Length: 199
Image (cartoon, rainbow, N blue to C red; front, side, top):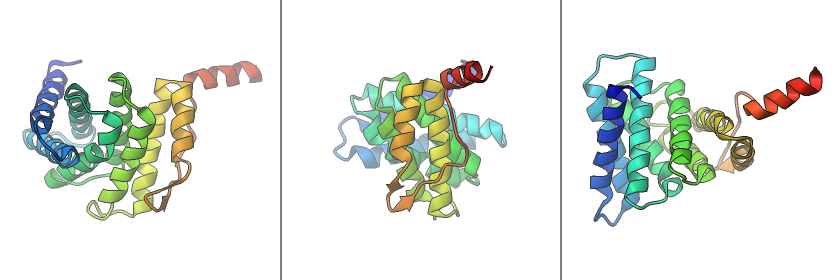
């Protein structure tokens, strides 16, 4: 972890812990904390494209750690984190489909890192993307597809079990939207066994 990345993650974590503690409505507090932390980080940079997405990923990672540290289940807060991430990004600039994908992936990966419910995080990421679709200027279907693709990609990197569970959870209608994946994902374990079978 680079020094800058570590600072962004730590700041975001501290920010969300302070925002959540002593608050009745955790969901609203998480949306605001995520959005505000991201606006703060992004306004201080001249980065573009991949650099900006990396800052979004770092901020999501910090917020996930903060939610866990404050004693909340990250899976339950995933929708709020995703809404806050997309809202904060939109306030500073444009939200691309790649931002939606990488945000969902970061949310799932960071949830796994803190021992949270990865399936709930993946579903929450898709729900949050659908909720923000109109605000970021895309259809609910496109937002859901991008978030699901990112979530499944992250799950594939965690384990074959996580991949199966997340894929099963997202292969249905979520918030009234039929979720369609853009690409098939397999874990490295599945890829290796497939190569052995065909060899």
